[in-house]
Image (cartoon, rainbow, N blue to C red):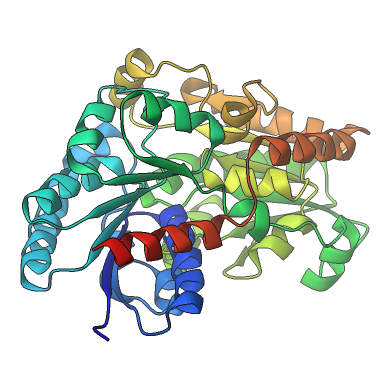
Length: 380
């Protein structure tokens, strides 16, 4: 039997996490399958041969992408050459549409079947991308049930495989139990700073988060500050920013769900991590800030009123969002203190957890996408 070969492209931390779960489930179905691609530690641990680490691609914002254009273009050209040289049986593109849709077009010309896992946000902006997808993608695997009709109406083969976090994130510890496991004192509150998984996000958000934390510690002396290091980020880079602020912060590189569960309140960059926080039932709010010109452009392009995934999937403003100029130390201080002091914060977070869980669709996301991959490989 000829060994099957797939190439998987994940350009950021959340994509690496989703792809890693998919590859792990895939290896359970076919231990002999060969996986190459762009990704990070989660994909490596699942058995993928990483050609380029996703940290070289993870950039947020239009202006920020332009600054890195030459580097990203070089990686793109190298990847296309590799696809020609070592042609896979299936190319799986995970989110990251600016890069991956262009790659899908190249793959189509090379006769490589394309499975796109995690839809570009065509329901939020650039709906015209559906036409591009129809021309260059053989099958869409979407996370959310509301995405299916969008592709069906455009004649694009589509399957809702469900969000892997429904299975991956299990609320197994109380805040007290998690604090004990993480070594925190029970008479102190734990405040989480989650500045994102991209360097550009961290540079934009972490200094103001630290400034807010400094203010809180001056008025609330029994508060510990914690920060998880996202996959693909260098902890030295994080530590350098923290040292400039003179705020005592516990930086944690693993035990993410345990650390999150130990928090009494969290301020987080917009992204997949906010779904994880919600599914663990932790009080939090969302921040988002990019270069001013990027924000002005995006504001005119985006067709939905929310940036946070919890708000998008439920269709309601269930989590507070602070955007751009609203992201100030004073405002973050105010909202964090409110979450730490409100008697019903935990109750509201548990209500949110149930709302989000019911909106995320079917269980077995990683297994479902793995089975779809096998089906497509059997056709090739």
